[in-house]
Length: 318
Image (cartoon, rainbow, N blue to C red; front, top):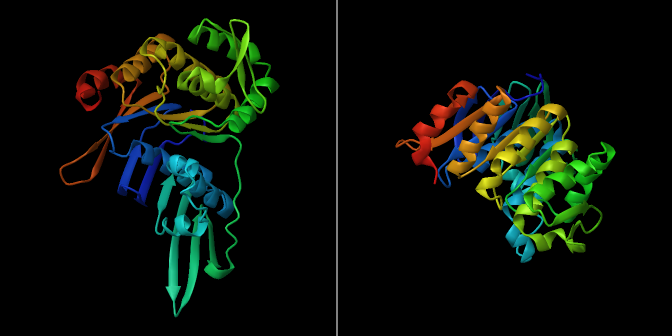
């Protein structure tokens, strides 16, 4: 397995994770569990870990996950861009893995507030009043939330498809998804030609947008990481095998580590079925459960145990 892949992680003081550890991850990792158990928060913590390569990227990761959580409020103009507020809400966060160590805390002494950052072997202290809150962006690390990508993000991801001459690959996938779709084009307003008529991608429903978002971003994230929340959103269960075959095949070709969540038993079954068909042993299924004590428990099933996971944990998903 590639050296840049996350194999183990420790999460402290991040949302519902007070003191959590997990290990054994592969190239493609599916996360399951009941509603509100912390599946999305887990992926957000991993996202912060791989993104936090310096202060600007750390701030960028915190802003990104806050914006994804506030999509509806942004649309209704109820969300204020207060970067300082949600950065300080991350006080005492620690996310460390086999590839990166990220820690942030706020120190106050005699009226002076300082931000303390740790990234791998680097420690930085900055006076809070002098902190710029500038952020940076890493092109091959992406998080697709359950709303899918915006038009501008799809346009950006599709550039990677074009650079790799994979336009016909995308067209073929969309045609299998909906036989009426003849062709896809990017641009400011992504469109599909449907029965000879050009329609905006947004007019075709969540499934088509989600599919384009996932496939195009797999190419964009070459040698990086892709996080997909509610992977099967808008995808009919009969099309899940095709989707999983694309994800497993392209992630291997492009050297992308994938983390995805689902609520669906059909999605887990499809995942196991396709992994077995392709003999892809770099896959895992993680089940998050909350114990009576309130602590989160992580059970990981590798390729050899994936079928047992479906049988034993079917009651945990719908």
